Length: 458
Ligand SMILES: Cc1ncc(COP(=O)(O)O)c(C=O)c1O
Image 1 (cartoon, protein in one colour):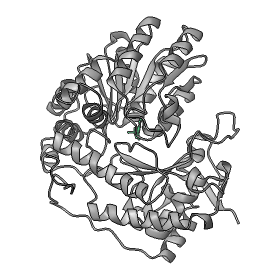
Image 2 (cartoon, helix red, strand yellow; image 1 turned 90 degrees about the horizontal axis):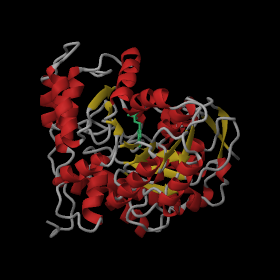
Image 3 (tube, helix red, strand yellow; image 1 turned 90 degrees about the vertical axis):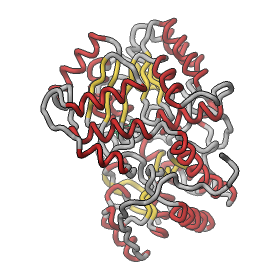
Image 4 (cartoon, protein in one colour; image 1 turned 180 degrees about the vertical axis):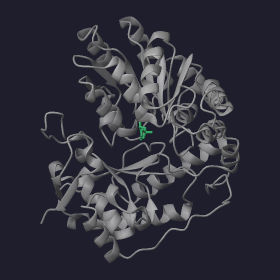
């Protein structure tokens, strides 16, 4: 299986999408018009789009065929039952509540169980998760292990929860923690996996304190592959088997099918608690739709049902994890500071280390992301002080890390695209000393990274 070094994509290309070449001058103009915020660009002006792996993957022939089976009945559609079966094969929770994407599941759950005075711990909250917790007035606390906050620390499961810190928090805030969350893989902490051993320990702590455990399971298949390949005793297990054990350790989950659902839209909330499920469904009907479609078309439900079968295949996951590591290994060999070990869905450049002459409150991650776009048309995403530095009271402090995430859409780019990315990142890194920071000239009160406008500092 590992006889040959070349990673080949385990698919052939069946339908192509053109990408448009642009010049540095054209990209400079686009940047000015976008207020130096890469979210504001016209995607046609992007050559290799690594902004996110969310909803940007290529669907398979069989998913497109499944789309044709989409049944758009308002209630009880066969597509709903196909979706339900596929979800419950992997996550056999009693209640599955479909939503249009992951944050809708978060919004519904936290609206029911959050609120002022409540605390919700997580290894690391993703930005929408944190925002949805805080929107209810609750506090979102990150308790990842110390290695998970150090971009250079080597640990096979850097997404693990700090068990002692969790135990302390649950003891100190007894009665005010409605749920413990674990994000697999830990996106904001570098796409790092959580081990089965850690999940079992989290479960034990939750049981001791009588608090339910939920998974933010967006990248469950990638996490399961890391368990299979890194955790002692797991190598011979199938990925679906590992996923089912992960599911069995929790009481419920939120999910964005835009990641390991291999779909372009969709998500769900799943749980065992009947009363909580009833209250969540009541909100679902108010905000998303009837419980058998929840904001999705029947064709979307079919695409997800098929995607969930494909995402747990060994050939797919081996290619997925190896091809991401290929990008990381090349940048690391070139001396570009990157978060290690490499995560599943993205390579994270350590902008704070590379641009040490730019203070965190002048946004080194933003400076690096803008430079990669300007020079090579590559769109990455700042994950640092722009994304996490502003607090609900309006104050600002440096985030734990200033990273630029190069997220790899699933089954979308070939190795030559990745080789091009390597060349551009190296070129920019060699000239890092010439980059300047930014200041924010306009921003909303929450989730500012999506819409803020910037100006380069002199
Ligand atoms: C860990 C994690 N949780 C939640 C979400 C939110 O999902 P969605 O974008 O479908 O709302 C994301 C999206 O990137 C994520 O990575």
